[in-house]
Amino acid sequence: MSCQFNFSAGPSLLPKDVMLRAQLEMINWNNTGMSVMEMSHRGKEYTPIILNAEKNIRALLNIPLNYRVLFLQGGASTQFLMSAYNLLETKASYLNTGSWSDKAIKEAKLFGSVNELASSKSSNFNYIPKDYVIPTDSDYFHCTSNNTIYGTQMKEFKSCPVPLICDMSSDIFSRVLDFSKFDLIYAGAQKNMGPAGTTIVIVKEDVLGKVTRQIPSMMNYQLMIDKDSMFNTPPVFSIYVSLLTMKWLKNLGGVETIDEINKTKAIVMYSEIDLNPLFKGFAAVEDRSTMNATFSLVNEGLKDTFESMVKEAGIEGINGHRSVGGYRASMYNALSLDSVKVLVEVMSELETKA
Ligand code: PMP
Image (cartoon, rainbow, N blue to C red; front, side, top):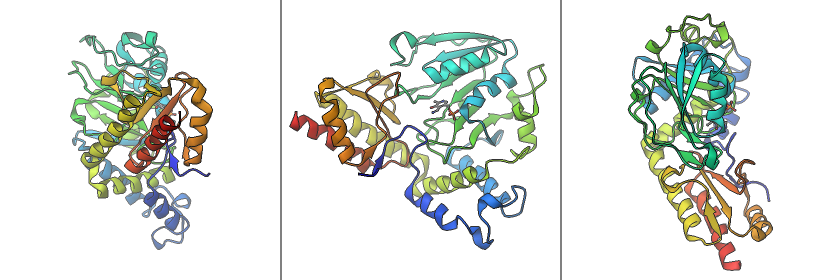
């Protein structure tokens, strides 16, 4: 059966309405006779698209006025180095909660000394360390809000005596957060925002300009701010579909509404993992992600039966990351509660069969 329920970790599903709208407008945007992909990024037709995308993001996340919103390229992986390039003068503190944090640490080491405050690496990152103190002499503290591979999520952000940088790639727009606590946030679009191609960066302007090194143009946040994300050609189509997704989220009731929906989906999913004796969860219960639920079969002998039932139900994308194994159900904003119920139904049917 072809895919009916897409649980992919990313790129992941987009709201159907968004894709239908993009399809409708694909070759003739706003009666211009052109596709969004075909027009000048500086023209009078495209400019309102990028401005509107920013406006919607600001409104949805309640971004304070002294923050700038950028649409860059190169994925969150480029932000691992770009954040350090622009903010790391002597030393920085990092929380290591998974291989994405690990990669951010590796890049930062090219620019200064890195203090890994805590790490859950020795237990394959199945929990979020909480027992650490952020030194006041760090240039900043970096963390990853949601660990896509392991299914762990930071529920609390300690009060931070230095600028707080957060990789929110896999849970931005999924829950209500006080963004004024953060100084720099980045996220690839391809989970909750739109198609891969653009990376959103939200930065408090006064944290910039403190490093003494020369920064190449494409790596320079201040230059990107001064040029309104138009230093070079931005990923026009990705930004346009992101705008459609932001409007979809707004019409749904905004981040407050999706936060409730996401919590309900997570309760349904984790209840099955906990109550069905055939399955066990991977992540520590208090750190479980509302976006990515990681679990495995207790008895691997049921693997083939379970996987063929999953396929038969039209479910795709639940294979776990190779470093964790088992299964991962990614429940991003566009995934409905009903889709989660279909997976849960298959899991409970397996229990009846076994
Ligand atoms: N950080 C997190 C938390 C991620 O989940 C990912 C990718 N899924 C990345 C960083 C890397 O993002 P990109 O592929 O956009 O560089």
